[in-house]
Every structure is written in structure tokens, then in C-alpha cells.
Image (cartoon, rainbow, N blue to C red; front, side, top):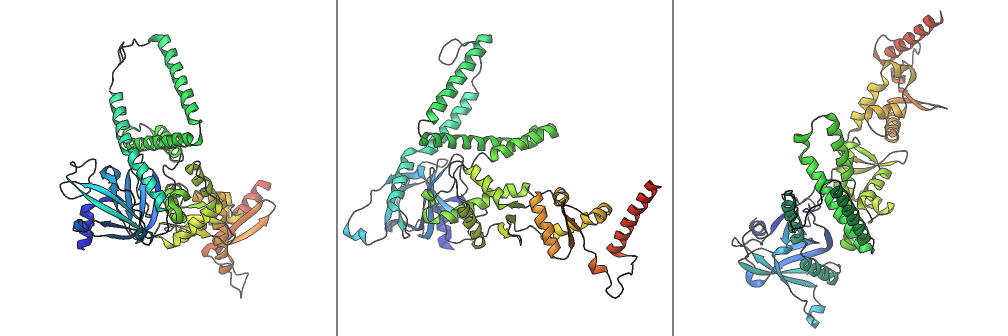
Length: 456
């Protein structure tokens, strides 16, 4: 208990998603990770925190995040890169060849003995932290990427861009610009502004297509911009929605922005040996909202298209997707992979209840019109608010449970309520005056009587 307290006091807390993935900050991108990593303090500063053992160390553009080895962990520990004052070069010696690779860096702490952060007071002291890599990851590559992210100082770029946008939005109009030049007004000003906009767009396109790296950089910027716009729309939904039409357009815009992309997709380059494990966790986080909109179940093929569209250029293969879904059994995530008897594979919420679906299907086929003519997969799809392919699988499952009967005709499948359990084998001609069998007889008789009236 005391060890946990010292860790919580020294490190910054990092929130985790329901699948155990770290919640990234705005404009933060995951770069690389290592498995089986210990974080240890230098010997004379061991009172600050006890060593963290055998966790996953994730490097992002903003932080070092250490995930506990326990699958049920709800929080992780983080060191902001802004708190790191120095990264030591690795020592090359004969002794180091027989030891686990080590990465040493100096961390600033505030007056409370906690890791320094941008929002806290200035660092008053420092401590050397050693990352001991006991796994089989590329420690040299991780160290190089670590130094690159630390020197890049992306967290400062994000803060300065936000402040520039805030100050830029407060500048007023007038005849003169901030540089003293006379502004173009009237029709000439509009045409000039339009031309400048096209020139800026053309310049951006030329920069983006210079090489693949520039294109990827622009794509990430667009994804981050879309995420900020989506958050802004979500925050303003309750206050600025004037009517249902405006609300519908906002929800449509939110869906479009949500499908633009994942800011930091898991790749084989960044995740290494944990690629499928981290991909599985990220997929579990991603599929939550589409599942809610699809009624709790989505075809695996549709998931493949949605997920790859969101990943942009970092596409995955069908085998990777299937392997990622199969790993959900080992994690405590709210989704699962299911395979119907027909072979169709779907992703569904664990809270999804077949009994509830069957009850709605029985209510549908018990209506007078359905008792006479049966129902199709399209009819069930409209009632269940799911895709016809998924509705057909539910109907076939209900048939296998003995709830429905199927009729195959040139027009396709028609499903009817199963009356056989209510027929007495000793007297098949006995007509009961209660139950669904009696209701079916009345529906058929009413239909026959209506046809006789029309004929006469």
C-alpha cells in the first residue's frame, strides 16, 4: 500500500480506456513501445518511488507512459517529456553486454516531490530514472525515437498554436492590417481574398505532395483538426441546437468527423511484438460508438471497412483484424467476436441479449398480417433497426431454437410463428380456443372472409 502511494505521489496519472489503452492528449501521437520494462530510481533517491516492474513503456510525442502488467489496471503512470532535462548516452562496456539494456534520463520534480509538469511550479530538484528493458524490443531504436521526440518539443507547438489561434481570433477589423498595409475592401477585396485563399490552398497541396512523409504529416494535422471540430460540436449540442433539423445536421457532421481518422493508429513499427495486442485494444475502443449506432451488432466485413477508413494510410489485413478480435477473450473489454451457425462473423456488445431480440421477433410474427403472410429479413431489419443481413441471421437462429418456421419460395425466405408445439399429436384436428394457434386460425378466417366478401 505504501509503495502504491509513493508511486502516485511521484508520477503523473495517465487515464486508460475501457480496453486498457492510454487516453491521449490533444495532438498527442503514439510513437513506439517496449515490453517488460522496469522503471527504477537512482540508489540515493529510492525514497521518492519504488521500482515499477515488468510493464509496457509507451513513448508519445508528449509523454512516457508506463502501463502496469495487470490486465485489470484502471490507471497508468506518466512522465511528461517537458519534465525531462537530460537523456544520457548509453554506456558501452563489456559489462553492459551481459546486462539488460538501460536508458537513463534526468527528470525534474516540483516542490512537492512530484514529476514536473507544464501546469505546476518550476522544477526545484531532479532525479535520474533508469528504464531497464528486459523484453526483446529494439532498445536502440527506442532511444533514438525518445531523443527525437524530446528534442522536437511537440507539446510546446500545440500550446503555441492554440494561443495563436486565440489571439488571432480577437483581432478586429479596420482599414489597416497588423503590418500597416492598407486592406483591400469591397469587390476588389473579396476577389483578392479569394485569390489568396486559392494560392494558399495550392501551396499547401504542393507541400503535401512533395513526398510521403509530408503527406502523412498533413493527414495527421487534418485528423487532429477534425477531432477538435467534433469536440466543439459535441460541447455545443445542448446550447445551440435550435430545432430537429439543425440537430440532425450536427449529428451527421459528428459522424463524418468521427470517421475521418484515428489520430495515433497502432502500427507494427510502433508496437513491435505487442502489435496485435495493442491493435485489439484500440479496435475495442474504436468500435464502441459504431456499435451503439448499429443496435449492438456489426458484420465483421463492415468493421474492416470502417476501421481501415479511420486508419488512413496505415491499413491492416483481414488476418490482422481477425487475430485482434480473437484476443478480446483475454482482455476485459465490453465487446466480443461471434460466429453464427451459417459462418457469418459479427462483433457485438457483451450486453447484447438474444432473448430480447427473440422477444421482438416473436411480437412481430404474432401480428395478424405476419400470421397470414410471414415476415422477411427486411421486415425484421426495420423492426430491429439493423442491417437485413444481420436480421436474417437472427431469424435463422430463432428458427434453430424452435421459435419460427421457414418457407423457401422463389421470392426468398419467409418466416412464420412455429405452431407445431401447440398441436396435440393425439388429435391434430382439435382447434383450441386459446394460444397463438387460435389467434392464427382467427387471422386466416378473417382474411378468407374478406376475400369472399370482395368476390360476391
